[in-house]
Image (tube, rainbow, N blue to C red):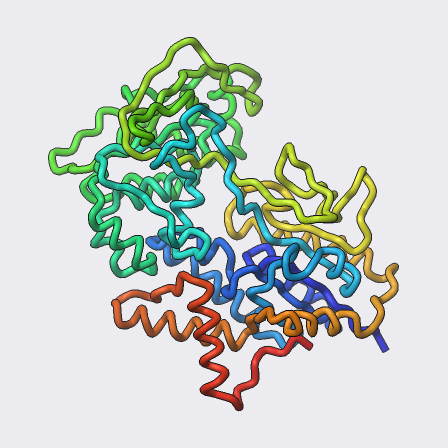
Length: 467
């Protein structure tokens, strides 16, 4: 008889669910506990995908099916590193898979970044998506001009949300508190700035097309400039670089664009790097940039600063220049890249594999790719697990259950599947009243109160088992 193996997956975003799916399919005797810091699953699909992109959120239907497996236990509201240590997990489980993503934003590292109304895109996205960590952020949208630093999909999302007519958002799952503020927004012009050229921009062509279809908004390239040097032309000629070619065609199509009915404006700037933010009375008043030129071989071009500076008067700056993973105590970490050092998902310390410890998703490869990218990434990690597991003796029986029992002994309210379903029902009911898909609960205390009341009012209802 095959011994039952137990796996812990830390994180319930796409990479965590795809890893769970691959493990469940490959190992009929494995039992998985999926730990999530928040009471709600789905990670950035819930709190990162823009509310006006509902089709991208349909992947949660796949995750729902995975979560219904009797061999998977969802354990929300449990933070690894605080409520349970990584060492305790490794001692209790045969396999530990880290899939908690890259949650911290990279800083621009310039003077004035700390001024009021200078924020990261992470904060803004979390705020309008109802993430509890950003529920109480304040964004002053009373000025007419905003600057978004970064040329990727997140930068595109925040630019579109800032310029989108509010009526276009009322029937999405945008957080109610954000909709209230956006309804009073006076922002009419957004400058989207990147330090490299149009060929190196990280937008997907689909996101760019979305920017070109914002109602009553004219989209232009600053000075009609779409710089493309010989090395860029070589990059565009590469058959594997179709997305860049489509992006450049989009940018070139903006030159000379005019619209009599436009009341909003989006301006792309290329080859400019943030130099400093100037303020007045502690608030952002101006963003100063240094022009750059591209030097190097195709696909290796660096943005080299020049002596030329220029400024954009603005009242809001949002930086979107990447995400950074966070280390845990006892976890090897590459602070330069913001990832866990690994080989195809096997965590390594000083070049040697760490027994029973694996990583997947952004924490494994950095913040690149789209939602679907995580599936192949997680399958690769699971293959390493399948290769290693036959050589490893099972963990001592009972340690896992003792670990899970310790949560309730310390009054940590783990949120199981049935609890999450109660939250889901409540959010959908609230959304129905507001004419939206859902009205998200945006505070952890609200969620815990709801599931606690649900248990009291339905004592015969079985909560998700941790066993």
